Length: 213
Figure (cartoon, rainbow, N blue to C red):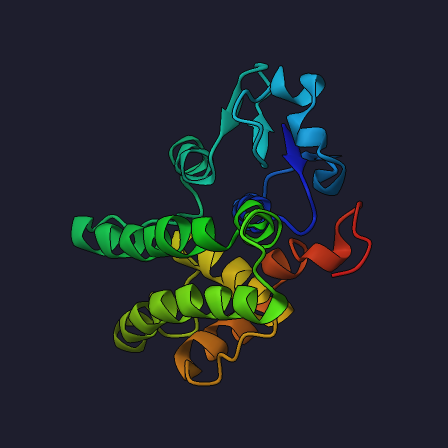
């Protein structure tokens, strides 16, 4: 398999974690987002959405969107599982992942931040306030969930899909200097995850195209 990735893309970071947790080998293909390679004809020929990441399967088929990719990995390589057998538990995990993927990340990705600055003339303080608002609204709910169901990981003592989503979002919050000390369960889970090999090997700083992280 080939993963079309950018080291600081939080969406690609999720998929790298999932691949590592599954113990799957893949080729890392760097797509330079700052140079807009994802909008070039070569990449659009593979992924018409022009988004990172994309996973090229051995068959040549290409999957886009992190939830679809991780769900496919779970169905195709069920061991070790990132979703439990119990239907209600699976729904809770998916709910937390979607909180991050749908309600936090899209409002704070680089395209939105650039639009705020370039089109709406928002200064750095306004952009930081925007970023902080959506992180805190999302993390308020995540903290309640993991305080009830969490252990070393978001849900108990084994990593799940939820951890694949949480870790990159906390990394981004830290990178943008967002205060998260008011979320002790999130911080504890994040730090534990980062100490695990599968998460550490997925970290932005150790990717082949890393410049600074």
